Image (tube, rainbow, N blue to C red; front, side, top):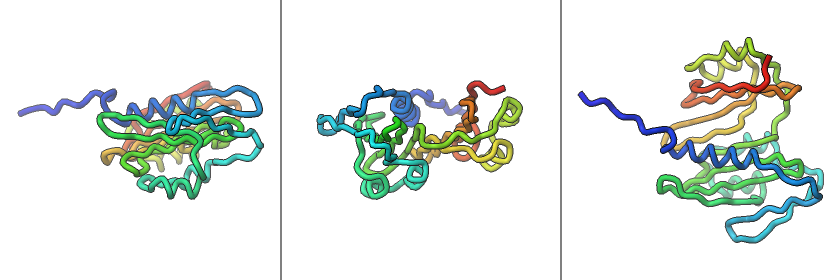
Amino acid sequence: MFQKIREPFYKKIWFWIIIVVISFGIASYNNSNMINILNTKNSTKTEVEKDGIKKVDYEKFCNIKIGSNYEEVKSILGQYRKSEESEIDGVKVVIYTWYNYDNSNMNVIVKDGKVVGKAQSGLSLENAEVNLIKYTKIQKGMNYSKVKDILGGGKLMYVSKINGNIKSIYLWTNSNGSNMNVTFENGKVTVKNRLGLN
């Protein structure tokens, strides 16, 4: 009998998409009145004014559906501010980014003309009440409903559906900035992380 050999995680498309999306979220900008963004699609610079009006918010982020096309996304968010084309495992992926004046942002990942993923940074409010005791209660294999019973509702940071595999990351952030996140794969907890929890 042959044993199936699992492909290393770093060869899976979702791994590289997450790396690219996280890179966007970590990027910081200067404090001038304008933010310069290079649109890699047409190699022209676009300037986004810090006008105090948020163009994207958590509600709009949640309204973007996996499987929708770019025109449907545009009707909710307006024109993107940055796009980056990439090819992962022979698959063309385009990552569209929308920025706010306060550097909060969201990304929409499109493959073959359809949304396969989305991610956000800074769009959700810090209103959780999580601690180390609650963190230790979260176990692999739990579903979101069980996690929610323990932690309360989390904020969706990332979701993707690639080759039938659904991956999502939820974040719980306390008012002091301490936080934890939980990764679900096909509805079940696979990973949890924490920062500054007591």
